[in-house]
Length: 98
Image (cartoon, rainbow, N blue to C red; front, side):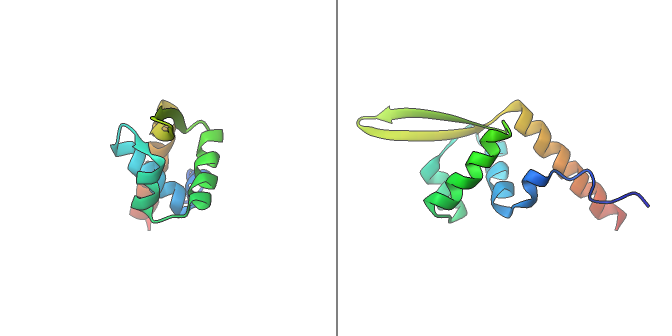
């Protein structure tokens, strides 16, 4: 029997990164604060996981100003969308084999 977890993407091992990608795949973009509230995370925890996803080039960060306040939004990249789809496909195959 082939190793059932070899096709899984290690970056998505974290439930937080899995949650972030799930939100981003169905939204064109989302602000940091909206993502934080939706996933019920602290600023630091979310920022750490977003940094990992950004380093992998799975998310795109856009910063803008609304008045004097910074507004940071996140969106999924084409690479991120493909990596997440591949990960979900591997999960589905693994579940069907068990």
